[in-house]
Length: 115
Image (tube, rainbow, N blue to C red; front, top):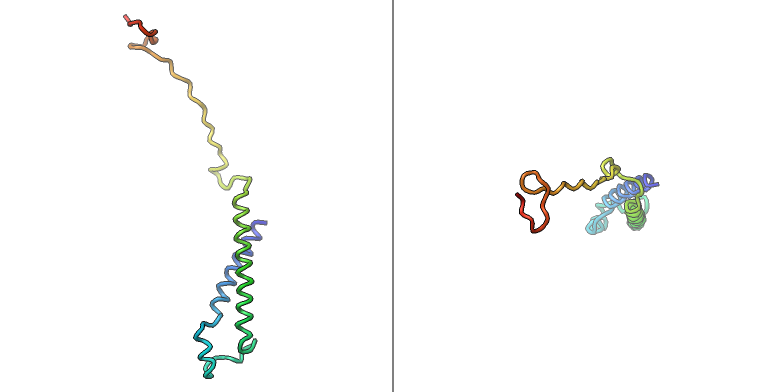
């Protein structure tokens, strides 16, 4: 399921990039008014702008929804993501070393002076 969302996410991103690059800027309408632009296109003079902007909005919504879906899946993973995370660090407490006094002899009780 996550792979399908990744594929849809990448395709939506590429589609948004392509549609934004295909759209005309604000100054493109001025050139079409004087006859230098292709105002008689496939969708008509204003039809292409509406079609491209609506399609861009739909693909941007798909991109946003897939981003939320991928965020949800990344936060709810039950299996480890990598080799290092699969190995749990088991920390075993070290055995306490015997307390020794001066020259290898056991420590004395309080108040006793070693001989």
